[in-house]
Image 1: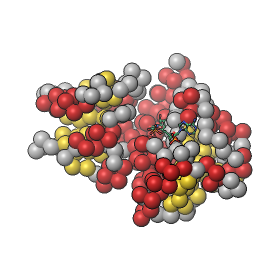
Image 2: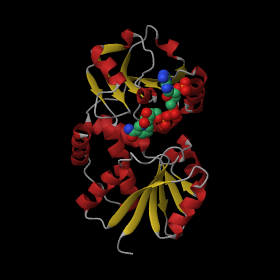
Image 3: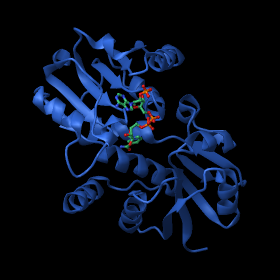
Image 4: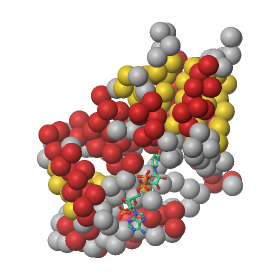
Length: 277
Ligand code: NDP
């Protein structure tokens, strides 16, 4: 058809910003496409995907809690998706098979490096959390050749397991939050979901230097608890995850359409919508 069909599948999905982002990309790049947010029943993911592509769908974004199921369903996967064990982008190929990619990590790296101008090379990086989001970002982060990368998580064993799994890609260590006592980092990335409850992991105040950058994957109208903590402990720069969200969407859009949208105007547009809400 002249209007290609795309969607994001998740549950819950009501608050997804993906339809707004992709509509803005499509308009900017003059692409005839529609993009909807679809709430998929927890036990109906595979059927919903099959129906979508049988009905002429061209590509899907996948969000919570289906990224691992999407990984299993893909016929082929990018290296970074294979490493992450999770897929957030499905793409229908000419032969009818499904290609799975994971664009979360490249989205985070692009936001920090290209948009914020932060340096990753040779830096001491700390990642807080050891959930699905961390799995997706470790390989792209390690590709930037940091001096070291530490993963600290409330449940220490999950961080140790992740560090072991990705060990061949760089200087990695994992452990509990007690790992952080007396240590300092150049870049701290909060990838816990604690902020959703207005909380944050318990961190020593001595974690930051006056040159440290702090990134929270979470975003909202107000600064998150981690961002407030970072400002209080005089971080050099602090950012939320809105740019990551738009950058991962742009990479998915590129996968599907082979056109790269400009992300700056879309981040600004979302930022002003958030502030007005
Ligand atoms: P998961 O549920 O897979 O993992 C949650 C992590 O947060 C675990 O490591 C958990 O620790 C930790 N955690 C939760 N509550 C607390 C707390 N009160 N104190 C300390 N640690 C806590 O979530 P995801 O990895 O999928 O997502 C993490 C965050 O990243 C979410 O807020 C999500 O919105 C955001 N995100 C943003 C994206 C963007 O584009 N900006 C993309 C993807 C994710 P434990 O193991 O001990 O339970």
